[in-house]
Amino acid sequence: MADETETTGAAGGEESGGGAGAVLGSLGGSAGTLTSEGAKLAEGAGDPAGTATDKSGEAEPKDGRAPWYGKLGDPALADYVQTKGWKSVEDVVKSAREVERLAMAPDKLPLPKDGDKEGWDQVYDRLGRPKSPEGYELGKMELPEGYTPHQPLVDKMAQVAHERGLSKAQMEGLFESYVQEEFAAHQAAEAARDEKASEQTAALQKEVGPAWGAFVADAQLGAKELGLSAEEVDGVGHVIGHDKVLRVLSKIGTPLRQDSAGDTHDGGQGFRRMEPAQAQARIDELTKDEGFRKRLRAGDQAATREWDQLNEVAAAGRRTGG
Image (cartoon, rainbow, N blue to C red; front, side, top):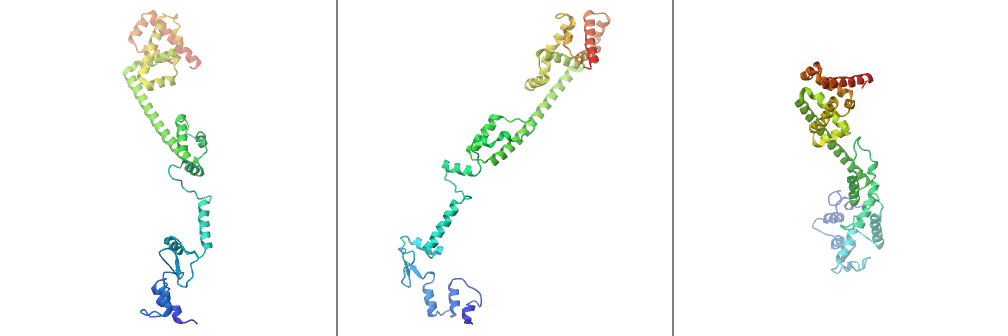
């Protein structure tokens, strides 16, 4: 069995670090006394290799042997070797090889300096940037129904994304968020536009009053005369106002109706331009017009002709289901 002083140490069984306490405890001496072996160890404390380094960086081992790395011009290098714990040239080579392996590993990507375009291009390519802006393939992404993006803007976004090094996945996420926000804003704008259109037509109907049916029939005649569809009329209304476009079309349609009723242009055949629903709207209006009713009872030719032709068109519509 080994001597008790060799196993218990100064702290009674506690392991100590490499400081003075460990030195004293390991030799079994008292706190104020050093044995000859302790004095030798204390003399070389802080120099595990048993060497001392002068200011020139040359190691001076106590046993007279030169250190394995010889004389170094920079004292800091000798300290570095001792700090790293290298014991031979083989240790240094192994360390250098490991550093190089980490630096050149496929999953390691050193960051270039600012302004190094070629270096940053390599980084962006490794991170998933496509070879060209077209490589983002934004045109293949699923879009909300009824939404068509502004293509020049999409092309510009792809170009800038490629210049800034965005990967394909990053650009897809960015574009998807943009489309969602832009589409929501577009829907909100359409809703506000339609609400404004309804307010304009409602105000006009209130202003026109009971003659609203005939007013609309004349506007329909005007639109038909100009060859405008309902969608095209709406488009104009969004620009100049729906109440205004209806007034213009009604002014165009009114003389067409009057000319047809008076047989001044086309032998009384102008009412053929009217739709059955338009003719019925005019009939409803004239029924409420006391002045027209008096003229009709008195046998006025213009009133009679208009009344008969309107009823003829309306009746034809009922027969055909129009």
